[in-house]
Image (cartoon, rainbow, N blue to C red; front, side):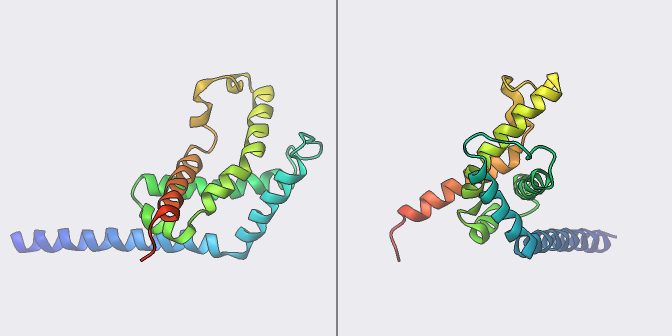
Length: 159
């Protein structure tokens, strides 16, 4: 009876590890998929294009939804790392400063999305303190972790 229980516990641990590995590989495949690079390029193009504040033609366009979708990939990665489903150090070793740079580039677009949402939905008025918990909080967290990771490595003495 005890031996059977031990075997079940060991099998459950192996299964959990396999699920985590499968999740990590699924996420890595998203980041190395060619569409990720295209969306990332689009993020940088749109951020530069609308830097002056002219958002004509952006709202609810395919570009708008593509950039949101791109940000949602980082949102999912951040959420899974926060919950321990994927290892944060492994994720940062794979992505390095990329989440930090992409978050900074995303900021003007994110600010515009928040501003437009507040016009359409009064409950989301852009002067509320809790809005950061609604609009890509896990992407923000991952970007901060990436910023810290980058700073630590940049200041480290070479071996």
